[in-house]
Image (cartoon, rainbow, N blue to C red; front, side, top):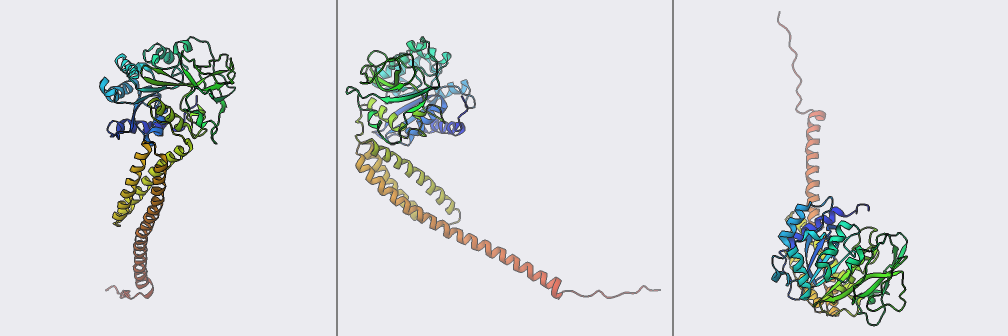
Length: 426
């Protein structure tokens, strides 16, 4: 597999996430999410969840990758940031395990997570058995924690299957008994459902697991799940995403991983712009919250939150730049604070599923941000005008003085006095 083009950027995002998440304060109605595993994959999940007002992610690298951290550094991260006791763990609502090396967690930590699911913590694990490599997948299958997820990891690692490069497609299960977690996204514009299949893994549902989407391709096997799609065929249809209830918790298994570049394209926003929304839908369902009725509106609302954060960051960078020239930025900062209060209210409404009201506030906030942006640019232009004027006067003044000296000494020769001739005495 070729190196991903955003590895350094993702690495920095993960590191910042590790340092910030431990001190960030979540709102009362915000869902606390633990994300652990491959630095690249958890970096993607962290980006998706960090911009969403509903979630407050804690990021823990838990897999060694060349160019990131050593095993001793990873184990140190786990010791520092994994919840210190079971009571603290129970304050979390959801866990995402993305291509984790399970031995990075101690037996005690694995049992804490397993028992946490029994007590009602939701969960998601990716890449079927975490990896196509046996030295990673077999320990995962043997772990207690894999028992809490709907994929039959023991059956997967004991099955002889191979990767393939032939086309496959994602089919959403339309059985009426399947909860509408992903089906609202099935017919939306922009979702690409056909991909090369060289990265797909085998996933086998346990008894009672509900397959929400299928991977359809030239597979030698077929697994319908608890409620099979009316067009299900065997072989050729295997689980792409599925869930089940384990104790009081609802957990998910994804056949593939969060995508980077051309790898795992379904969970990659370059191919599927709704990938973050689908992951959030699984999280919402697992935590017992109400699924949005209009997923298109919610997608647009999340885009507005991202747009606001981007514009706000640019505005403060511009203010900091202008402030260095002594310009007064107090009025602009006051307006930004006022807009921030509007956005905070919009986020509060969003967390309460009042999407229409939240969207109206975000429209208002973004409109005001445009006006503030124009005002900040005007202030910057005024400040730079004085800078340019002073520079012009300085250059012009020096040029005039240099010209006057040159004219006086070399042209007019006003200060020139001829040296008198002398004669040698005999």
